[in-house]
Amino acid sequence: MGIINRLLRRFGRSQSDAMLTGEEAHGITSEIGMRPTPERQQRLEYSWETIDYDYRAVVLDIRRMDREDGRVKRIHNRVARDVTRGGLVLLQADPSARVQQAWREFVRRLQLDNAQKLKSDARGLVMEGNLPMQWVLDNKGQVVAAVRMPAETIRPIVGNDGRFKDVSAAYAQYDFQRGQDIAVFGLWQLTLARQDPDNFDDLSSLGRPFLDASREIWRKLRLTDTDLVIRRHHRSPMRLSHVLEGASAEDLEEYRQHTEANKDQITTDFYSNKKGGVQAVQGDATMGEIADVVYLLDSFFSGSPLPKGLAGYTDGLARDILEDLKRDYYDEVDQIQDVLAMVYQQGFRLHLLLQGIPADAENFRVSFAERRTETLNQTTDRALKLKALQLPQSMIWEELGYNPADVEQRRENDEKNYDPYPEDAHVPSVKVTPGNAPKGESMTSVGNHG
Image (cartoon, rainbow, N blue to C red; front, side, top):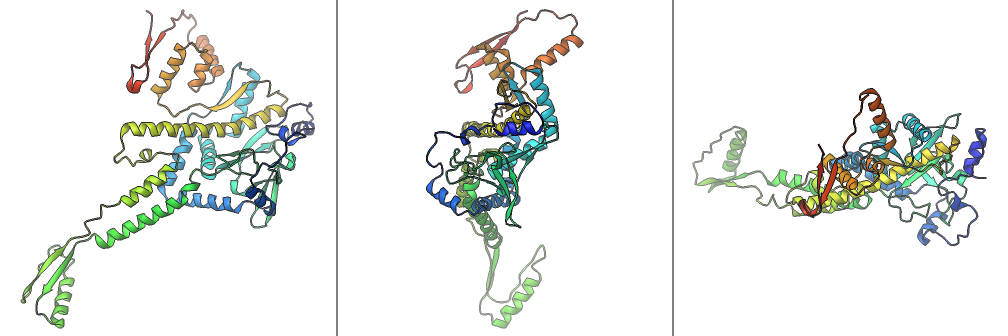
């Protein structure tokens, strides 16, 4: 009996043949061999049912970097903001009123229409490399909350083969003070999204934060920044060299005390009855030589998803190069959106199954509304080109980030309330001219027939 059937029986619902994602692989199959690497197997064997302390150290380092360095905080905030732009939408090829209503209630209960909630989840995925999402049920079998758990306290309960020992106890939360597990989660109860794991099929392999490999470069960059400030503080001021030829030690000391006593005045004159003079010693003329700092800065941002130019460092950066870097950054954003949206899709699928709705029969997909972080003109131009290719109108609405069912519902409501005598609308013609736009892109023109 699968996990879903056991849950349905608990709430007095009819049985279902549906299973959770990945549950089939933990039954009786033909799989043989070991999924983890030999080093990973040894770590699992001697872990003594504790969490991965190396991963915990990485997460603590990343959090410290985020608190102490505005550049790191900007990277995390910018990525999380771009990932969650526009919010979540439910896409269906054949919209179902029942599923659409369930989705609206699901979003309201879980606060998925709250930008703070979505940004917090996205920020946790970027900073920790993992997103453990606990699904909380009420007494009616409805998913009423999606709680993000601290990733460094979650450990998968797997064997040396890299598979769950029991899908009804797939994950555990470890308490560092007590030195023991304080909660055990079934596969249905907690969904773990992993960003760039060493092996996706090895369920003991956790994800990696985006900046985990840049920690050493960051330490050197911070050290160099501090050295630069100390060097400028001690070597940049101008100094004066006082020469008193033939003066005794007593005369020189008296002259020094008298001169230093008046040094804070705006205008200071120097008087002497001995041969000598006062010469200015300029500060360090090599203060502008900071190639080592620039090198470390470039190395740090090369390991981050955000290009250096988007963080404000635009010195010597050509516009066309920045455009290419932005495209690569947007691809990273799209990939994070897919990982994050899959978490909410798994939670909504669980909710449908517990409500007796055959989720596998409903062709739906959860996605973020705005993709590729484009401008409004770029998004509209792309939609017009797809229209010129005669793609279905519902797919074009999906590309624009709208739910086609909601658009049609709004259109019908507007016709009832604002346009009681609609006229036949002329469909505008869309033409695409290849190679007639900057950088060899195609030009889009729209014609309205009068």
